[in-house]
Image 1 (spheres, helix red, strand yellow):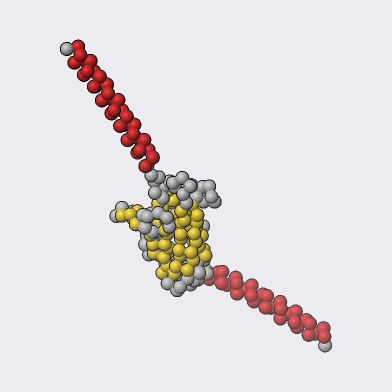
Image 2 (tube, rainbow, N blue to C red; image 1 turned 30 degrees about the vertical axis):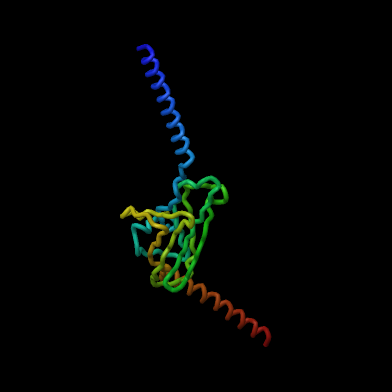
Length: 201
């Protein structure tokens, strides 16, 4: 009976050791296989009125934006793998054929890793006093999927936002001041020419 008790204790002890060893192996393997959070972007915002107004492009498709320069903010989150890089591509295109492409290396400036908010300023290529349709396509080139559509929670690779772009119409007072300034310059030129003619005669 004593022999049986020792053997049971011996078997239990070996079984515990084996389980602990297996648990350590599993945990070690899980630690080496863990992946970084994939990079994603969100909250694509257009800034208007000198940055005082923020318009979420995903929530406001077809909105009209004004200005010859438009600044957008884009939130980039996630974790790059060790020594990993990515590129954020931002493409502005209007219905008149105007195209602007900007690309940003991640980590920014070689050392700034996500999360961060990137400010992107686009010089609008086609200036018009009437609204023209435009799109902004944002894509993390080495990440797929890289955007979650807010209302459906669907993950996609890149996102295209639609809006209209228009140049602000000058106010009548501005036009009046401009015309008055041009008239004053022309009057001075005419007066100096008359003075030169009278001096030569």
